[in-house]
Image (cartoon, rainbow, N blue to C red; front, side):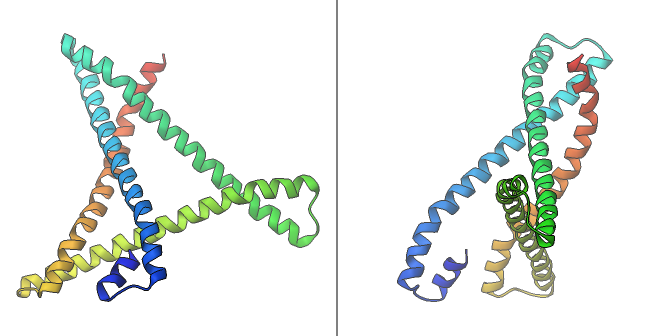
Length: 209
């Protein structure tokens, strides 16, 4: 956080102290929410992998009672996860359509007055389009920060091979390594998630029959 970095350099102003006190709980709440999301994602990933494994075993021969019970328990969780992903995709598509329609209506507005229906539609869609834009900017900022962290970690590790780092460099490396590792894990999870979805398609179709 920018204010915490300033606090390390010297005392903050009263306004900055007040702003920091106001923002810290929000940031902490956001971090908790991210941790919970990560836990749910990990649990869902484990469930998906196990369902794929059990379905493969079932094709080779009858499952044991324990395996049948485990499969029966995990299938609803996996199905729920797939539904949640489908809802997220629908929301994403709806925001994408809203942005395109806002662009279209604003272009029409430049050519002349809109009808009452078009004005009402524009007023309704603009907040959705702005929300998508903010989300896109936030994602871009986080991606850029992780990219910079990875590049700096590579640089510091290269320096470390040439000789001991300074205390400041060691502290910076210790701070940045988790961010770089998180980026790497996210890339691996994205690739493995796509593979699991391909493997799960026959399973999901079999449940719908």
